[in-house]
Amino acid sequence: MAVEKGSFEVKVGLAEMLKGGVIMDVTTAEQAKIAEDAGAVAVMALERIPADIRKDGGIARMSNPEIIRAIQKAVSIPVMAKCRIGHFAEAQILEALEVDFIDESEVLTPADEENHIYKHDFKVPFVCGARDLGEALRRVGEGAALIRTKGEAGSGNIVEAVRHMRSIQSAIHGLTVLDRTQLMADSKQLGAPFTLVEQVAKIGKLPVPNFSAGGIATPADAALMMQLGAQAVFVGSGIFKSEDPAARAQAIVEATTYYNDPEKLAHISAGLKAAMRGLDMSEIPPEERLQERGW
Amino acid sequence: MVAIIGVLALQGDFTRHEEMLRSLGYKVRAVRYPTELEDLAGLIIPGGESTTISKQLDAGGLREGILALSRTRPVMGTCAGLILMARMSSDTRVNSLSLLDVAVSRNGWGRQVHSFTTSITMQANRHQDTIPAVFIRAPRIEDVGPEVEVLARIGDEPVLVRQGFHLGATFHPELTQNALVHELFLSALPI
Image 1 (cartoon, rainbow over the protein chains, first blue to last red):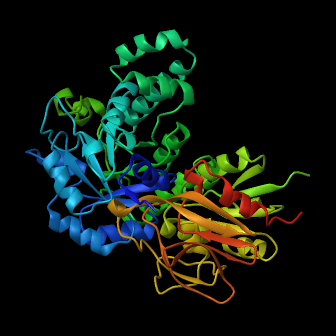
Image 2 (cartoon, rainbow over the protein chains, first blue to last red):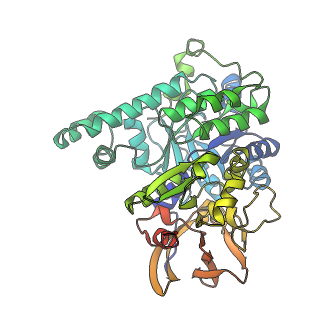
Image 3 (cartoon, chains in turn cyan, red):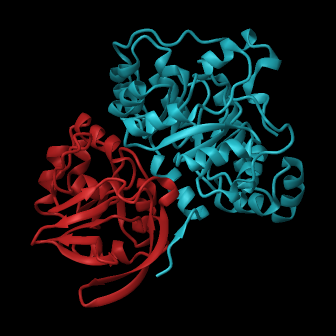
């Protein structure tokens, strides 16, 4: 009886299990426990959350392994961690730590300005950000088992997440109505592998699950992204930068399940304290926008 | 009247179960509210995060309804679903339904890098079939009670169990194209 580990099927399998859930950024074991108790399906172990990375400046790198280990010890749900774009050595270290998912993330300072990691080389699954269909399919081509729209991390502003989700969804819809003879030209225009373009045209969705990230701060934000087609949400700064992390975390978990039920959402949203302050896009100069990172 | 099969849709890969059931010609209902449990011929609790589903199940007031349904209708759980159907354990993060007299340890095979695919032999209703099985951060069944039949194993370890008309799998038949486990579950439906 042959046993196969680290196959693409097994990687996408974990992404399937996270659907309908909330993945929360945490920086300590205590925060990880709050997230697990609130019903998070996974946590992202970080040294600093995106809002602080944005504020502090400097080079943002993979988290200290001690932080990751402490968080792995504290919770029973999957633990994810971020590595820099193209930094395959950081990814190797995260794999050695047995994190459950690696986020090759634009939130950290890129290590390679041309290439992303060749993710098929790893046993651990990768999630990558994307702003449009071409970027999403390039990442899947490199081996990503899960795509998340980038949004604008640490902004508390949902506008970019919406833009990216709409962009991906409408491009997918466009492919499904094209004549087969037009797909190569589209593949060229998207900068995406032809076989993946062909597959998307046929199945009408990405070849891997598609989640949303970057700006979700309220239960309504989570419901909005789910209604726009996200299959789960990542919440970064939105929880632990708010005034009531535990209650807000639980409310966002419920909103992600009952995203189509306005009455329930009204009930869930009532009584929460202030959300994170957030930034208008005009307050973030183009050169400081994290979403521009990735190629 | 066509039988409607419910799939608990609080979190997890419930759409994969829905697709499998539809491909077998069944009507399917995603269940998020207690009223949606009415008139079901059977219920599937999907894979996902057992801690999340457990909390949502109580927050959504679904526990009593599922227990009531389970007295007369078959319930199947895969992975997290099996954890929710197993005996109560010392792990307070999951408040299980105790529909199957088995003890499970969550993530018994380890973290995601240890997740695997293999093929297993399923023995049920005088048939023997080899089926593909996908194990994702899967639980391990550590003890089975006297009323529990073991339908498939890896080595000595049970991975598919049946008690009365309830089924539990530590793997994910819904992630494959093979419908035999679902067909076995459906064969227990009241006619």
